[in-house]
Length: 96
Image (cartoon, rainbow, N blue to C red; front, side, top):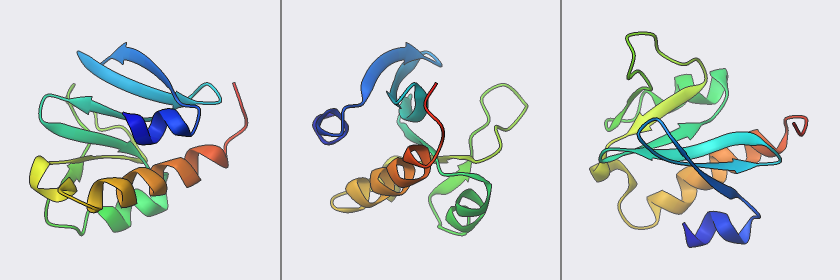
């Protein structure tokens, strides 16, 4: 939370967990024990090759451009790396 707060992210309750937004666009969140990241379609496809990544699907309809990373996949420095990928994608979007 501290990392994304420094980027000016706003915290909001969503998906039964917490979500962070930059410029009004959802960037990342937490669902149960997983990190949810908005990476964009291309980066999300690349991320899914990572062993602890899976499509973000809690409703039976996966959200395009989003991935879920299980706890073992964002240990240590990996958390900041994942969050920075999401940040760079979301900052490229028009503000809402």
